[in-house]
Image (cartoon, rainbow, N blue to C red; front, top):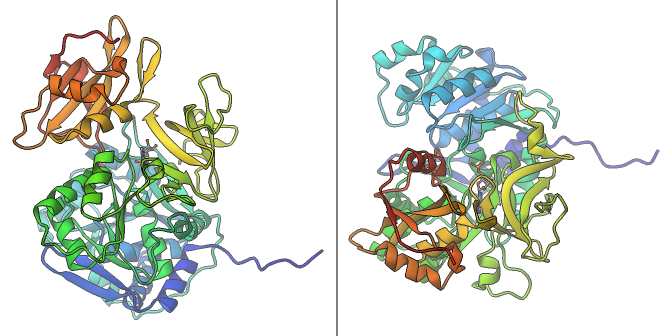
Length: 548
Ligand code: AMP
């Protein structure tokens, strides 16, 4: 037999050891509302060892699950490494889940210990009685005192994070881990039905982190970077950023609970962040603040990454006006998440709309195919649409306790997204399968309608859902939030849209709200809007017109 390469395991401890040794001077900054507390990677690494030793003393071992119910901060990062390095599974709990869903996911994942921030402890306490598997809560003081009455509601042992770490002398014996073992898990945000658990392995996490800079060559996370980690650490491991940044020595700025436009815009400037990532609704808020505060110096910023929902072209141009590039990425909880990132192809200018308005280019390591309505594989012609299916080493092969065969097709994950791919591998998402509007047998893309409406200067937010229609089966209902002080009408918007989309797409039904409801990860929540529309709770204006 020929000798081949060594069989080194691709594990999270391997990422941890590398960053701790090679990038010991890089920094983690945590914002407390006024200033940033700072620690070097070496200091964080020493605390990770203490946390791991403390968790082991509490009986956490290989295969156990440890939940985190925390904002983005240094302690959360410590758990990101300590838990998987012990061979246990890090379960990042979504802070915005409904109480019943929270109890459900904790029970299903069998969380044994939950590390929880003091500011969100009351949320957890409300359902602690229903959490059957939790033996201990470890509380991190992250900006609120720990109330004895709340502690009393938890019904399990409650320990203080810093006291636990202080009691450890340091040094821990790490177990040998198999790269295919479970390392972390995250539940889908459950916009339709109950959340489903996705379990990441050490190997998938390592490969995803390693591939990331290759996928985003225009915005890599390297040791000259400072990444403002806006995407929550409970949303697909903050899109893998903590692992990428640690692996490559990028500073991380953790905004904690200060996730509004103003503090984020100010943090970008005051920390001289070079890159940041978040969902479009956040970038829209930040843009509004930046426009009003031209004095903020963003000269260090190389660009922003937007993902999790379609990026409205209006945001791209809005940031262009400030000299800031926004790049788009596409993926999902099931895909770790990065599958495609919009990068300029050979010969294209950085501001060329042909790539900038695409959802992203397929990254190496991920295979994509488009399955048309008739079940055949669609050509990559940039026009034929169908359901996007993906496979690869960081794409899930099933759900926790739920093989969900309907979500897979011959080993490919059915993403539930509809789109096309062009000859250069640029993907364009036109809709979510559940959101497409079928009018008179033909599909209307809600994403394109939304982008068209949102490009009107008087529109702050817009989303489009399908509603039943006697004649056409379904028709679009546009839900719009006007910019403050604006008085734009449905007639104005229809006229404006007429140049941008096919005439038969033009919505006859319009509703104006103060805000579009958002999901637990900040996306427009169409499920809630559909429920409100069918319960007759939306004041719908009907424009008298026939689709033609
Ligand atoms: P989640 O698992 O919460 O991250 O949601 C994943 C879903 O978000 C995908 O299946 C898409 O429907 C949507 N999504 C993510 N990124 C984009 C994007 N760049 N454009 C359009 N939709 C996106």
